[in-house]
Image 1 (cartoon, rainbow, N blue to C red):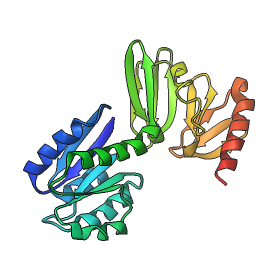
Image 2 (image 1 turned 45 degrees about the vertical axis):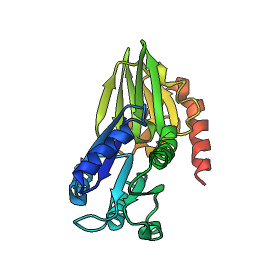
Image 3 (image 1 turned 90 degrees about the vertical axis):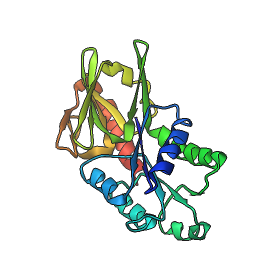
Length: 235
């Protein structure tokens, strides 16, 4: 699921803008509209996460550039696109990392470029699973570990939430084959080494959420090699 926010105090514009965005995205997605920045920040404080945010620079309450800086403090990896009726803000937006600057009235081809750029950043972090003629899409960078139970798996996320999906753990092996941070350590567990805080060699991986992932004898040697390579890659 790709979560998108539009922050603009002109509700009529925002609703039409959302329709335009939705027509350009074929992945499963959700678009929320906020008419002020405080409502959006409150959502972030309550644990909601977004992949993309479109921010109008001129807001009734504050300015979009300062708001973007606050948003990045909560979500460092979020993709920001600025919107403004004034081209004069073109240089000011560089105070905050962002992907695109759109000037109202927004041309469709420019919106398409902005959306495609955001999706290009997001898609490498999407994990697509196919099982029983169904497709499930997960955000891999938010996964701490995956637990397998026969023909279903439980995916545990960094915010403490978990999803049970009707997909066997073995179905994760191929999609994650080239993902350097994911490691099968046990018949029932796959861990994301990005969230590893300690390692008892060939025995246990300790994760940032205090979960202890066992390493079975069958996977011990390969797991030790993979963890050594991963830590070395971090410099």
